[in-house]
Image (cartoon, rainbow, N blue to C red):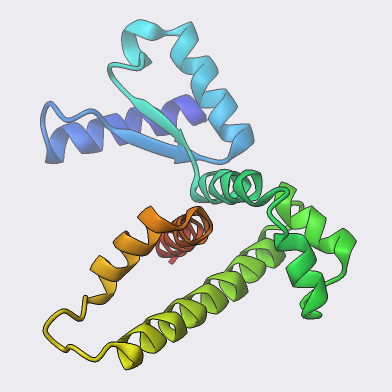
Length: 170
């Protein structure tokens, strides 16, 4: 059945865009079957003739795991616990992405908080700045702060990565 589906996809893509390599996405069990078909019949379904990728759920889970690896030992789980977003055990499970929806929500809360803190800091900088001509735009100010402060650089990088994951999920 999977092999038949691969044939249909190849034929449809070749009809619409001759010469283009088709891409199929599948979740874990079907991905495994597709890869086995590719390895069994490399002449018909080889990696140069058909690209098989994990589905969106697996890509999101791995992106969240990357965030979890970066946030491990950063104090993130303690901060989530301290502000009563979750308990400490649940916060630790977000690092491993035990539950995708809850982990996504925790990262949405984190991104929102980091965004608010970033804009508060920039507003304070701009209100204390007397010379309007030398006032830096937000992007330039963030670049300068990232060079000056490793902590700012870390959390700004986390914010950017979280936003990229959310854009992908959307």
